[in-house]
Structure formats: C-alpha cells, structure tokens
Image 1 (cartoon, rainbow, N blue to C red):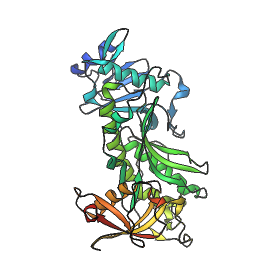
Image 2 (image 1 turned 90 degrees about the vertical axis):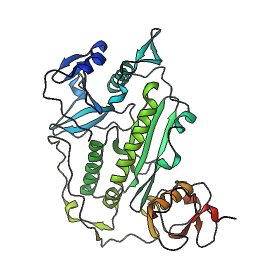
Image 3 (image 1 turned 90 degrees about the horizontal axis):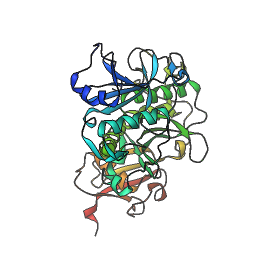
Image 4 (image 1 turned 120 degrees about the vertical axis):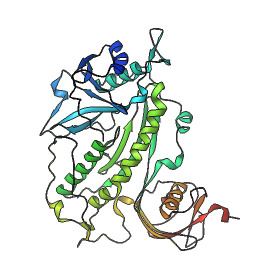
Length: 386
C-alpha cells in the first residue's frame, strides 16, 4: 500500500538522523521536516509528504481529488486520514550518505539522499528542473525487456510505452483507450473511484484521465513520471516503477473494461460511490458481482473504442482464447508473447502469430494493421517456420 501513517513515537530512529539532520531536517512527531517537506523513514520505503505554506495547494475532506497526471515527478494525491495528502514513497535503499559522483553542487559531490530530497522538493513545489536531461534512450532500454511493456489482464492486453524526451522520462500504460462519451454518470464515477483506489494501492503509480490523441473524448491511463530524477537513482526507480505499473494495470484491466462496456449491466452502478476520504486508504469493495448481459447489445464487428477482438488458438488446438479490447498499435510480437503466457506455453520458446484465414505470419508491427476485427489466428513456435 502507498499509505503509511506517521509513527506515534516522538523521536525518530537514530540511524536515519545521520542522513536527514545534515540536510537541514529537524525531528517532528516520528518523522523529520524541512520547508514544508516531511519525511517518515521506514525499513523498506520512505514516505514523503509535502505540506506547503500556501493552503490553496492542500486538499481537505469533501474536495474532489486533485489531479497530477502528466506533471513532473512521482508525487500524487492519496486518500488518508479524512483528507487527500500529497505523498511520494521511495525505496529506503536509495537514501544513503555516500556521495554521488554524478550529482554536484558548487563543485562538491552531494549525497544520494540529498539529491533525492532535492528532486522531491523541486517536483512537489513545481520548481523548474533547469539543467536536467533524461538518460539516453539506449541506456533506458537496457533497464528492461520489451515484453515487460505488455500486460495480460484476463482476456485483455495492455501495451505500455516509455516516454523519453530530453526533458522528460515517464512510463505510461493505457487502461481504456477510449472512455465512452455517453458513459452514464454513475458508471463514470465508479470508474474514477476504481482508478483512485489503484493510485492509493501502488507506490509511485498515478491514475487518471487524459484527452484522447485524436481529440475525441478521454483515455484512462496509469503512469509513473520520473522527470528530474537524479542519475544515482534513475535505474532503480525505473525498474521499481515498471513493476508497480504492471501490477496496477493487471489489477485494473477487467474491472475498468466492464465499467466501460455497455454489454455489462450491474445494478449497483445506478448509485454513485462515496468519494469522501476515509481514515486509511480509500477502499472500493463493490467490483465483484457477476456481469449480466445488457439489453443494449453492442453492434457486432464494432469493438468499443476502436479496439481489436479476435480468436486465438495454439497450433495443436489445445488452447483457444477469445481475446478482446486489444490496442491496435500493439506489436504482433508482444501479443504473441502475451498469448503464450496466457495459454501456459513455454516461455523460453519464441512465438509467432499466423492469420488462420491466409496463413500469413504477422510481422513485427502493429497487429491492427495486419488482421481484421473478428479474425482467427494461430500461435505457433517460431521454429516451425522454414
């Protein structure tokens, strides 16, 4: 969970003092404070909270949860103690007193802890990250395998992306490639509540809505933004963020899809969820009923939001899957790997997809450019090719 209440003790552990006291922090109610930034050390994760003097930047119970989607840094608003709190959780292993030979200030190397705390404060306060440049793309790509950007959630596939620009570094996964514009208000409220619960559950992960790329409606996304992260922590945070995102996307996949699907009718959607923050993390407990067919059936051949639907089987015919709501831009190779995992096929074998109607092997480019909606495909070991 992201949320961790401040300790009830009045004196923090001595081991953390050597990290924080030299940085200008003072002990305060089980944590440390400096210029609106409060730090609560713990064994595995340190929880940081930003409490600015400007009360307009805070959120109280009853307010709508503020949105930080697309903003630099991994800060996010989390429901806790009957209010929304601006929190950032970072792995405890990053906070060391060793000097960081990459980060310098006035000709002197700064500690890894100092570099992280400066980044945290600057991104919370919206300070311009002058002089920071994202790691080279080939360096970033050495931190993960391409398959890690594909997440299987039941019959759904979600393809993530790495956003790397000179002044930007982020990871982003779509949850819904298009939120229906005619989605009833109660369903939209439940969808928002689902995204907010995921944001409360996973460290670093933010969830919310963005305008669709084509300008028509909205998309629902999950992201981690590492813009400005100091070099000493960039790889560890990137790897940690990708793993957190994969967990959040898998957890969100089917419930979010049901909420946006007019073929699924649940009576509890007629009421709007209570969004008031509660003591502890927000808990939405209702997303477990069995879906029932809707009277307003979707028109065959018209997948929601321009997504792709097809039938996939392995070459022996032992496994047959109905795959739906696949992003058309997902590379065919990523789909093949995800399907093999879903079917429980060997992970050490390369897999390819054939169009069952034509026998053509799908190339390593967007799958939506190569098969039609409703197609049937066959998953085959690459070794079967001549």
